[in-house]
Amino acid sequence: MREAETSVPDGRVAGMTEQTRHLGVSIDRPAPDVYEWAADPRHLTEWAPGLTSRVEQLDGRWFVWMGDDRVEFEFAPRNEFGVLDHRVTTPSGQVFDNPMRVIADGADRCDVVFTLRRSPGLTDAEFDRDAGLVSADLARLKRIVEQRD
Image (cartoon, rainbow, N blue to C red):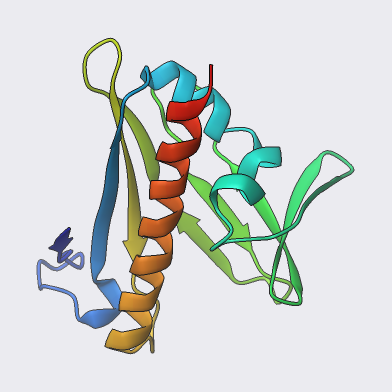
């Protein structure tokens, strides 16, 4: 796991609120297959229980349950580049943008990379816990799509 620091506009290195981790997994399946399966919000409960245990669609919008809160969940529009960025909007209106990519590695393999950003006020232990949850979700995605026919 590699951790990267980002820069703020004036070139200074940002503090802990700007810390990111790029978490990834290699999958023995073609990138388009992985992308198509993972991009379907109905599959979130199967591979991302660290995010949600319930998904519902209302009036064309997708919602996931995080604990007791129903939050809006929106993937980037379908695309040929493997971009699975997603936005989570909490009931209070707070927005979290989560970059995620499916990157081809030859014809029959790919890497899935999630960029985890440290939220303001998150302790080291909480950030490590979040990284562990995302890593577990990515490992679950790998197991599921590699076992599909």
